[in-house]
Length: 169
Image (cartoon, rainbow, N blue to C red; front, side, top):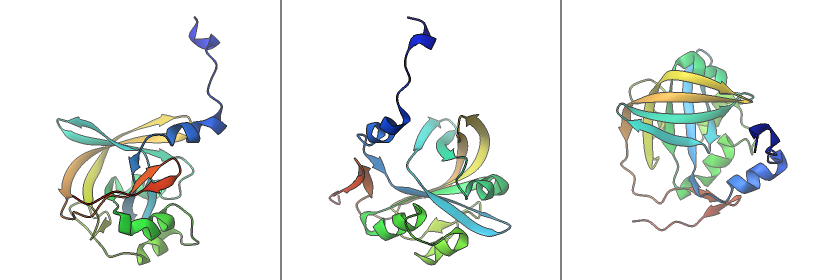
């Protein structure tokens, strides 16, 4: 069969299809000239351990994308089940925008100056190595330059459009 003959999946079916995988909620954040900006990222994955590198997919319309690119760095903040309200803020389900989103939670920095949530399950600080444009998404490759993983709280996990209850270790 020729690749052009294979029908595409209807975009309306895409998100329900992606919902069948359990994924950790994470806030990706950066600081630029206008201050901090961030978004709820549901597409963060490791790429390689040598050197330690992450892949973050960012929709081009995401308002925080310009700040992330300007900064040349970002932090991935993995959320706990206690952070559901924070996930709502960074997921755009409240009126908070831009730097106002950071009034929820206590924030600091590691190496790059990107915002790091003090009680996150784990944080990973990255410098941008490369970006790849695909359709309406920018794929960002971030080399890990710092991390912290001190919180044993259960992670915030999304599954089929809801939050999974996760027991602590």
